[in-house]
Length: 337
Image (cartoon, rainbow, N blue to C red; front, side, top):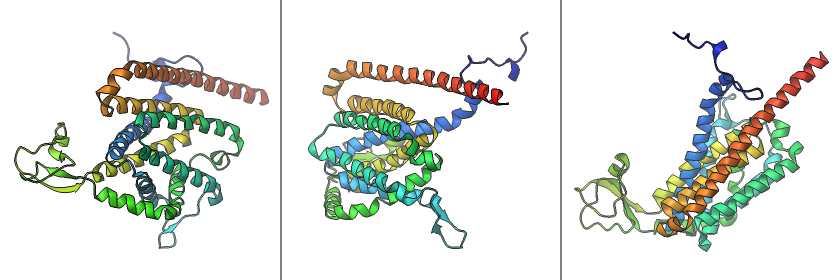
């Protein structure tokens, strides 16, 4: 009869790799982080495509709601009650450090969401946006010693999340007429039924019907009434996917900011490349229709495999390199002693 495994008898990894115990300790936070990125960002891309298919020219409204909701949700984490009244605590990073980042983030987000007004397909949009990851990585390498996280520490991602969105809100004043026009257009999109069960006979739902029973029990969205009269409301068809897009955007950027605070710019870039490959697959296979499926399945599979192999190769190489650096540090400390 074999003896049970004790900590000293646990299988060990080759030299240069993290121990099995340390891997088990880091699994829960990494599972949450990757769930936020892949679950939140991929579903966000899906609902973005749904939203822009109903109203392509809603980029300014979409961007404003993203920034507003994110700023409001992250505000409580920046409040202090020391004086009895809520007030924004002193930031760890000076506000002047956020100025350029806020301006660039606002401009890039607005332009990215406004591109759909020019009938840019989602797969093309994803591919072109992926180029920004490479630029970000190269820029981070060029100014590595002057980065904000390098100077003030990398654990201020909540502060970065709040200020990068809150400080951008006044910039939308320049787009106020466009915001009003897009909101009015959103309210005039075809009516859809949202409720438990089907609407009463004779109720027109040109925007479709979303029966919550179908969501709860895994069925599909029905475009025809049936199965008895239910209870619900008629809404402009843009509001449901718009709200879901804003909610999933909050999850997505939360995960990306957490990742940025933990790993290097190169690792962030590779993780986001894999995420964008997953979003591209969802767009082509689930939303793009039969025409996109037949023509692009092989290229998509080859591209996804290349991305996966490259990411796995980097992970193994980085793990071994990190172990070599740690061994070098230990040897240096021994010599100094």
